[in-house]
Amino acid sequence: MNKFLVALLATTALAGAAEAATVYPLDRATILTSSPFDFKVEFDGVVKPEDIKVTVNGQDYKTVFGKEAQFVAEEKGAKDKVLGSALVLRGLTLATPGAYKVEVSAGPQTKSVTWDVYGTADKPKAKNVIFLIGDGLSVAHRTAARIMSKGMSEGKANGRLNMDDLDRMAFIGTSSTEAVATDSANTMSAYMTGHKTAVNALGVYADRTPDSFDDPKVETLAEALRRQTKKSIGIVTNSELQDATPAAVVAHTRKRADKAEITEMMLEVKPDVVLGGGSAYFLPKSTPGSKRKDEKDFVKSFRDAGYTLATDKAELANAAGTNTGKVLGLFHTGNLDSTLDREFLKKGTVDKFPNQPGLVEMTQAALNQLSKNPDGFFLMVEAANIDKMSHPLDWDRAVVDTIEFDKAIGLARDFAAKNPDTLIVVTGDHTHGVSIIGTVDDSKAGPEMREKVGTYASAGFPNYVDSNGDGYPDSVDVSRRLFLNANNGPDHYETYRPKLDGPFVPAIQNEKKEYVANEAYKDVPGAVFVAGNIPRDGDSGVHAVDDVVLQSSGPGSEGFKGYMEQSDVYRLLADVMALGVKQTQ
Image 1 (cartoon, rainbow, N blue to C red):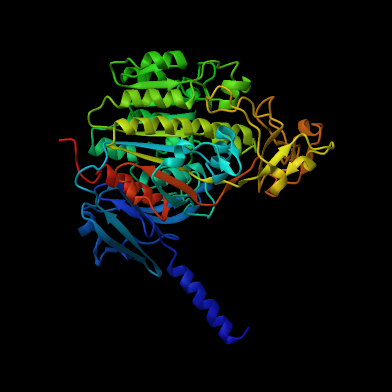
Image 2 (cartoon, rainbow, N blue to C red):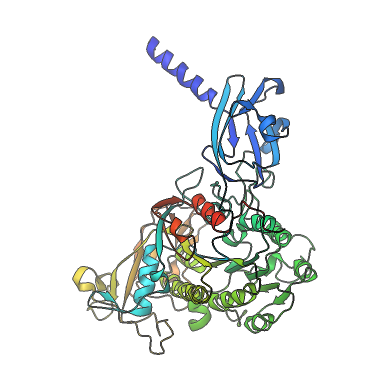
């Protein structure tokens, strides 16, 4: 090996060693003044405490932070493998805005990060904030919902969605700290904390230890509201309340699957209105349907905390008259059914949970309750089934849920029209790889469904009908219908038809633990086998990396523009609600 190559390799090795330390929060973190967060330094291997030097803007860190970090001699991973030493400082706050350059060294290991600590307006710009998330909402979902709901003729939409007329728009980057790809946990966590994190993480930076509850925490929006304001907080979703998006409003864990613990975290924060599914994690182990591993009864705990319980549509309507101001709605042991199943086909689990409220009813109930607070409120509304139906490539269900989501947006706009001190934000947490290709026209001759796909001029226009004017098509199974298709997925059979017998299950696991095309759809007339293009351990389509579209209206909406990171959205929300200023005196 020549001398030049040896020198190059040595230099590269030294450079790698010099960057071995990891600092949390990460470089370029944006931190709200006085918002508590955990500071951590991870060293590669065991180091001596006397060899560690940490400065902030050139000063010893203890002078700036006001306290000393705990030295951990050995952090351990799986099977007690020693990972290295660490410094940990919990609950740090920084009161002064500005750039904070943190420099760390221990022997040859060095790391430098710079944080942007920011303040907010002295007074709130908006009294109320309604934050509406279409989980997985992509441009194709919006377009398909508009066409399916309003129709199209001569190249122009015959009507507009509620989301179409919001005033301002931005493109939002969704990538995680560890990869260009993303999930609902890290994306919603970025919206709700102002800090980007890793896939599956909520309200923490994902560190190297196996314990999912010891990772460096950052404050959630709900915690900031409790700390700084008297505003009410509402969470509405048609998923489990412990699912990633609603959990991100309150939770701190490296693993979004820690659903039993997330239920407890929700009780700690006590949002005033909590509506969704996931009762299985509220019920003690001995209760049928429970998924807890202990006998803790969180239905009782919430009731003891003053919540009125609702378990179906009728009880939700009755709960609107509660004097406590707190409502817990648990309408399913798991995720609520899609709108298409719940309102039209009566499939899925509707036979077991026949009186589930929809997103519109839940949003209206939340607005009625939260608006009683003279100090205002923050309401998060999630249309979870857009995502949950997009994963199995069940596009008709995903689009009908997008129509329902738009109706919830309409309620928010109606409320804001009467209460102009309300900011509305509508966005997705991530996208899916879906596009509208054209139409499927049953009138075209031949047995092959593939030949019935209309592209370019032969696509024509779909013939959905909304005879009662409710905004939903009377049927999704019309003779010329939209053809949505994914750019990713497992092996499956494309049927070119709506799945009227129940939600689509594109792939099932074989004896090798690989997902293969579900043979149940093989004999559907005209079905075509489609080879998957993702690893065989995947049973459904995956999220896309594409930017999401954010739309907004109301006071403070002028800040949403151009390209933004999801963590930037939190910064604007904090400014609109003046979370840098104590408002509880």
